[in-house]
Length: 129
Image (cartoon, rainbow, N blue to C red):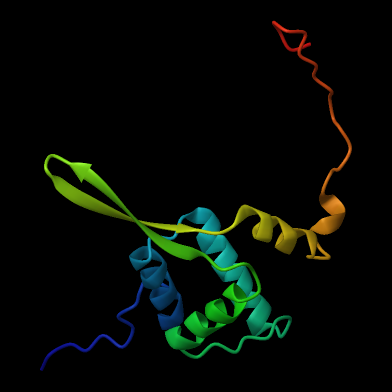
């Protein structure tokens, strides 16, 4: 009769500990990321934080909603001739002015912008002083 191990996750305290450690290892989380994830899990377990995601798709949809809050990126294709052929580079950009205006309208960020001159430089024709 084969021996059945009722606790194959040993030496971990429980199966959930093993599954968390395995997932952290597979995801290649570093020490800070692992600690942050554990901190978040314990905040949820202790009722300090609400958690609603049930799938990867829900996470993607949340990121999509968040992306609409700022100036969107625009995709451009740049073709460059190289050794008798054209190589295409796909570049994502956004208008700097629109992005800056988004930041200025954010009530959490706007108070931290410094508008006063920090140091005044003058050019005397040869050097900056």
